[in-house]
Image 1: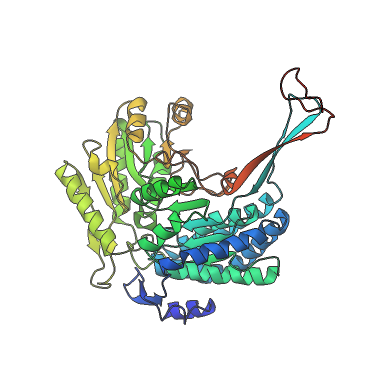
Image 2: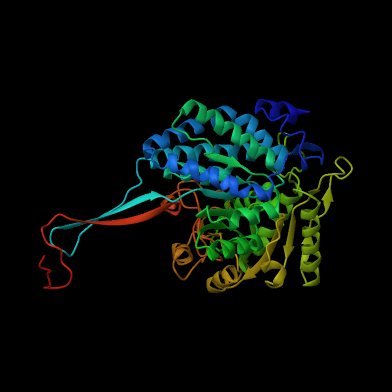
Length: 499
């Protein structure tokens, strides 16, 4: 089988054959590995190893740390085809998306290399004569990264590239559904570290494999001052409470439930392509998937028939086959959640087109579905709840204020967009009175964020997350220093001690 050859190229064949965690490919349901799990009782030892690595790594100059990340980028380039195909096998993404995810890893490495020479602080004017103030940024400590199955490698890289140049070792807990890609990434990192030399301490990257119990033990450990977690809102709430209880720092990216507003002036050809890409890509299993389409009544009847025709022609099949646009859901649980949501939508008065299982005769142990369009009379509870599947709810509006209110009236809030050629509408959408999401796009769908910008600020968590802009500050601590270069020590206005 092709996965055996790929695993062998990452030296993973023995490691993927003797463990207790069974890994199945969503492509056909076949077992592609059995991986050893990490005992939660081992967390103190893992944390101690990370702390020793931190003590050494934080003293390595930041530009030198950047050299390791540069080498990591080179190794990822060399492994792009194999790693991208492994992502497709283990997560069910179409091959181009698997390759694209590895490209995002390469891109963030390039970004972080430049960043390693730009960890700037400030010089600050002091109110005291003969004094100087300056701000310095120091490494924060070991960083725990918890990633989800839908982006099995890129989320780690977004965090790790920044954490490493900032001086922080990384402990990674991937989803128990996608451990093989994580082990492959560890091997790629080891190759880069070997080229880098002795300045890279042992345990700079540790990969742990396990489920909820392991995650809870890692999150509760006080030796991880930074915890970056990607996943469900339910998981995020648990992580946030546990980390806050010990005064740690959380970087959370949780629900999306992203919306697109299609205004009367929209370029419908452009909107149609964006809807299709962002609603059905990754079989609706992205945090930035388009889930709610808010269409002006004047254009609804022109757009919907074309959208349904496009949905009916979507190529569904093995993500490894050329020409496939939609691969499988990750597992049977995801399929059942999708069917429950569709039944609830019907009970709420929705009209469902699509959503049925397909290709069951060819792959009875996999879950392929036809993406669903659901025309809703109102934004009911099922619409406000995010189902991680290819369901697109369609709502109508009359005024822009109404459309913005509909978009914002959900607890999630990662990404958003409007299609309009009216500058007054687009600027209103981008204003403080417009979209309340961390990402707001005009004439482009909600998915496909670039690494150069911080990846939004999901409104439920109130924060930003990894990737570009000034996200590096989340992995460091700020220190303000005051230097007295005068011969006096001012204690209060006009008061001096005589010594």
